Length: 354
Image (cartoon, rainbow, N blue to C red):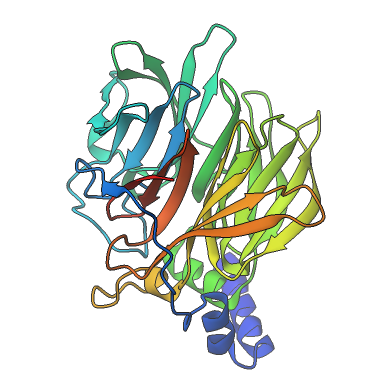
């Protein structure tokens, strides 16, 4: 009965949209071409060849990088090769990325498929790393403790019925986080129709050991999520609506929408400068090239900087744009002391001096 209801809804959706293909192409920016904006002094991180989908920079300059994502519907890398978490030091003149050893008898390394990541530093300076994982294309959150000997101790795996299609995560406690579900449906066929018709059924969840709840919904592919430096606001990327939504966070963990910023690009992960509060946003200028990958049509990349986002007139600056000949499919960008690190869904990572 449930499947019949879903198929009926799809049929009604097709009837509602006179030209669903045109609407879909518009939401994907299918015909947008990229005018390059170059940065000087850029180099690849030579150890990264199979993606750097998300990254998180600690105040001391150490950066965690998730690599090797295999995501349903996108270009697949070697499915027999597990993903990994890399560590790099942004203070080094010529930084190298080293794979972190994962310790834990209950963790299955062979199916590790990391996506969004976030850190939380406790009062005793213990650093916890939360990783969205897709073992066998499912969704879990893996909780790790960062060890001084440059390893990750696996503490627990989190599963919940409200976390079926995880994309990104932002930690607000040692076992507490907000997370984005980029689809409502789990079935790949129904996911496609949900995305194609723009049903905007994806949603945001708050998780703690004592409470799990939906705190925002109605998203057309909820993607990156992050927190303001003062912890009062949550920023969420709505990829297929080309928006960044700004929410006020309340003491009971609920969210209230304050504003949305519309951009001419498909926004992905959001990094927040801990000093200035500026947002650094990696984007996909032409979504057709990532959702319908063709090796003959390289994925373009784009990085935006948004200053004063809480004011009536935020300043949006195009920092970097490239048509895919250098860097394909930018998913994350973060700045540390005048150095910019740009990651990608399955390609390389670029390190630039601003």
